[in-house]
Length: 297
Image 1: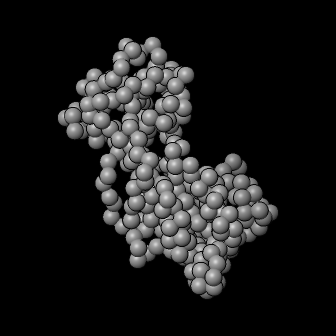
Image 2 (image 1 turned 120 degrees about the vertical axis):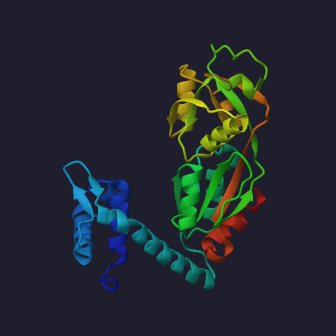
C-alpha cells in the first residue's frame, strides 16, 4: 500500500478535507474536478475504506478519513522537509514554508516581513494560516506548520517548541462603546470592570487565555456574553453595545472612531508577541532560515 500511494493523491485528499468541497479543491489544486475524484477513488481503493461522505453540496470526512488525515498531512510535510533539506545542501532554499499568524499582529509588519523573505529566497513558497494561539502551538508541535507568530498574555513557555519573544509587546486597554458609563474615565482598575458584560475571542486564543487568567487572579469569573472567532467581530459587538472587551492598544487605536479605549492601570496588562518553532532537534532548514531572518524583530 505504501509503495503504490502517490504524494499527489495524499495532497488531493488533504485539500479536499480542508475545503470540504471537490470543486473548490480542484480550483486550489489547479486540476480538473474529475482528476480530484479519481485521486480520491484510487486512495479509497488502496485503503479499503471510504474517506468522505458525499452529498450534492459538500463532503465531509468519514471516521476513517478523520483517522487518516493527520498521517497524510505528516507524510506530505516529511516530503516537503526532505526537498528543502536537499536543496539547502546544494546551496539554495526551496520548498514550502508554512507560517501561522494570530489575528491583529500589525506591530510586527508580517506581510512586509514575508515579502522580504520571499525576495531573498524566491524558490520558497509561503503558505500562511491564521488561527488562535493555542491552535497554532499545536500545529507547530505536530509539524503541520513550521513557525508561528503568537500572542501571549504572559511569558509562559510551552513544551516541544522554542520561543523567541519579540520587541513589540504592548499594553492591553479596556474597550467600551461611546455611550457606556465608563467611557469618560481616564483610567480603569480591573475591579471596575469585574462585573461588566464581556465580549471575548473564543477559547484557544491568546486574548481569551489572558482574560481568563486575569479573572482567575482576581478570584472571580468573567461574565462573558459573547465569544467570537475574530477581533473585528469583537469590535463590532462592543460598538453595538453588547458588552466591553480587553484588547491590545494598537488594535483599539485602529477602531477609535467607533469605540473608546481606556488604559488599564491596576493591574497593567501586556500582550506579548512571540515567534515559535519546533524544538531545535526537530526544526527544518527552512524554518531555521526564517527564524534567523527574523532576528532583527
